[in-house]
Length: 246
Image 1: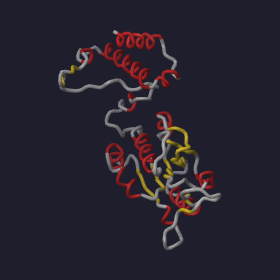
Image 2: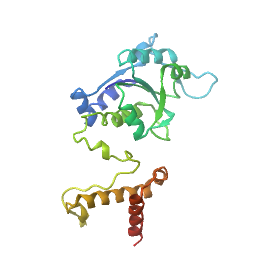
Image 3: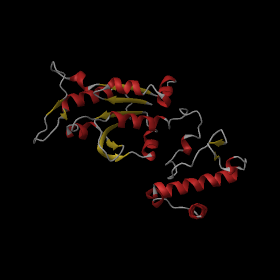
Image 4: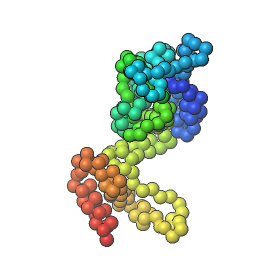
């Protein structure tokens, strides 16, 4: 996959993607991440990329001229079927399903907004969709772009060391993840659950599913409301809630 980020802070993005899973994927040639700076397309000595909004009001708006030029430059270096995405607070919420959908593509063009936003004419003509990482406002779209890159890249074939890791992540099947433990068996008086030490894979699977259902019920009941549970899942959730009451 090839990813291009249009940003006023290319050094920030370039350094961040060198770390962790994304950085290793870049080193192995599984993904490429480049940046394009709209300021490079400014025609004045000040490198102006923004201006006051028509109609008045506070703040500045990224200009159509420089932003569109940067997007077109980045798009020319990506596969033809790439998706252009604006990272904005008014976009559709990023979900695991969207990350999985984008991971099927050969290229992504990400526009990181700044200030009060981007001239709407650019968003209409140069982007395919808008995505938000949450109901809050950030100073710019660089962090959301990095979040999206991480969420997508880790789903690419061969990126994670264990092929099953991504398939067991939270949200993949509509549930939060179950609790995890590793050595030592006893830490400050707290023990690893016995079921995880016994080697009974059927019992472990059942325990993990029960914990995932219970944790989702307690922390994200909205996810369970969207899920059609089978008989086993309903029984396990009832068991979990009963155990919590005792």
